Image (tube, rainbow, N blue to C red; front, side, top):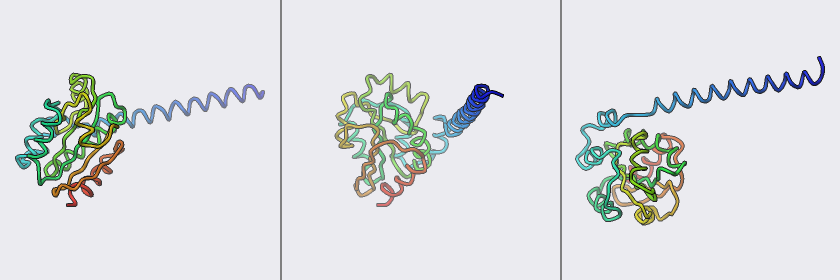
Length: 196
C-alpha cells in the first residue's frame, strides 16, 4: 500500500471516530437535558404545601412581572426573614440560558424553604423573555427590567448572569457568572442563604 493510500485511510478512520464520538455526545446531552426538564405542573406538585410567601411565588411560576425595582423591593420586603435567591438573567444571554436547568432543579429541590426570584434584565421585550420561559420553565417569577436598573441596583453588576443570596438575617453574597450544575448552585444556596 502506498503512503498516500495509508494517509487517506488514516484520515478516513479519524473522521469516522470523530463522527461516532460526536453522535454519542449529542445523544447523551440531549437525553440528559430532557431528563432534567420539568414541566410547570410537575414543579407545582413537588412544591405543593409550601409556606404562603413561597407558595405565592410558585403560583407565578415562569411569569414576567411588571413594576420594576419598586415592585421587586416590595416583594423582598414581604419575604423579609426568609432566605432568598435572586438570579439576574436575559433571554439573549448564552451563559444565562445554559444555567436555567440548574436553576430549575435547585428551585424545586429547595423551594419549600428558599424564595427564588428572577430579574429579566435588559431584554428587548417581555415577549422574548416569556418565549424563553415557555421552553425553559422555572418555579418562580421574574421581574421585567428593560433598562437594567433593577438588576444593577440588586446585583451591583452590569453583567449577566449574576446570582444574589440573602440569608434570613439579611446577609448577602453575590456570585458572578453562570452555574454549571444544580449541585453547585444548591451547595451555594445552603452555604449562603440557609446558613444564617
